[in-house]
Amino acid sequence: MKEVLLLNSDYEPLNVCHARRALSLILLGKAEMIESHELNIFTTRGALPAPSVVKMRYHVRRPLPQLRLSRHSVLARDGYTCMYCGIKGKDLTIDHVIPRWMGGPHRWDNLVACCRKCNLKKGDKTPQQARMKLRTVPKRPHFIPYISLPAYLKAKSKDQWSFYLPAFESFPLQELAS
Image 1: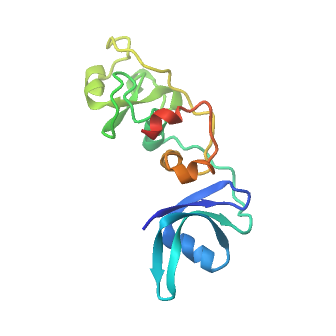
Image 2: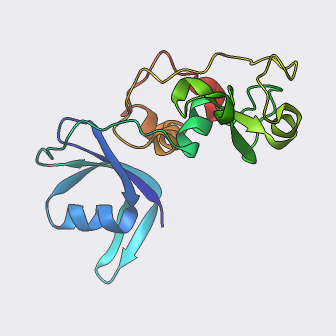
Image 3: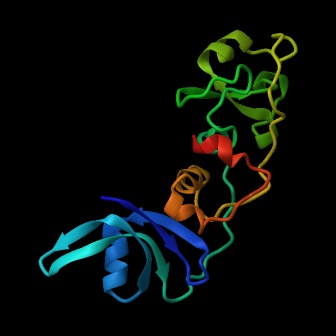
């Protein structure tokens, strides 16, 4: 089943859901289809266009989301790139720039994506002690996406969805889309 971007009535991204859920919202009259896939969904009553972007007909109130500090959020912030050697990939770990045993906090500004080779080389040392240099200074992202950061980056790479997602200038989306 295809994934569907679910928008609030004011076009604010709410969630990414499956086409089955989006279709049920449409059929119940709770949402309307904004964009569709080129594929159809076949039912007993015939073929229906598969939704790609769906907007709620009423406003869904929810609290302002918090950007959670998680492994996936740190990897997404760093573009799935090792912050020491620059290698890209999904097989990355999280490294504390200042090790925990030296009093390094478990915060955005002390965590970076790191490949296994660089993590072994650095060990329990600071980058200066290991003679390694960070490519960028880690910091907390200055934005809060309404959907999770990995889901936002995945959604931003889809052409039909990118128009409905907010752009954040402090975030290198061009690098992450590849």
